[in-house]
Amino acid sequence: MKKVDPQRHAERMAHKQKIMNERIARADKEQGVLLVLTGPGKGKSSSGFGMLARALGHGMKVGVVQFIKGKFQTGEEAFFRQQPNVDYHMMGEGYTWDTQDRDKDVQAAEAAWEVARGMLVDPAVDLVLLDELNIALRHGYLELDRVLDDLQVRPPMQHVVVTGRHAPEALIELADTVTEMRVVKHAFKEQGVKAQKGIEL
Image 1 (cartoon, rainbow, N blue to C red):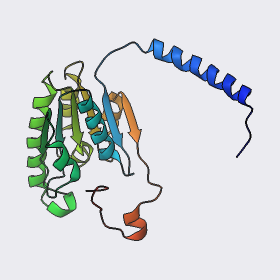
Image 2: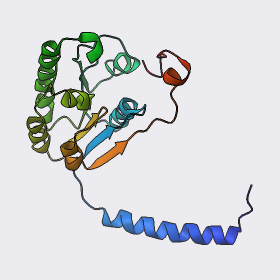
Image 3: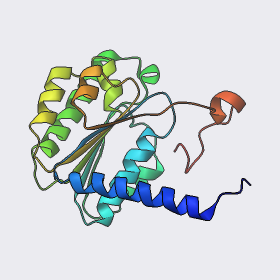
């Protein structure tokens, strides 16, 4: 381990603390934020559900609409459906390569968006998770402008988390916070390990 001078370390941390305290003091706005979690790496939905748990810990009311997913049971659905203050809707027809029926996928996405819109106009809903919405947008199952309009007119203190690969540029522009997950290694691709309960399911 590299030897670090304790005095120099303390000075550096004091300087960093001053900078961070100044930034925190300047950040005085209160508003709902739109977060987009995208990219090819694992963890987008997991991160979204982590924020859901955090919100529930603060006594907030949350809503979940899952696009695409819907043909298999997941741990997050089993857990969050049991919690108070959660309005949970799994409304997809399954992965697009499994359904092979565009009309059915479009109908499912439109039905899911109607549920989502109901949440996006309700000021009592503090956080809305739109899981895999980006996939529905990428395949053209929903009209992008309509989605963007509905997101923009939501209650001012409502937070929204959107997940899925290939987030459209217009959504990225609208978002307040965007995180792109990247793949370094994945057990399925590298070693042929199937989806595991508690990790992918």
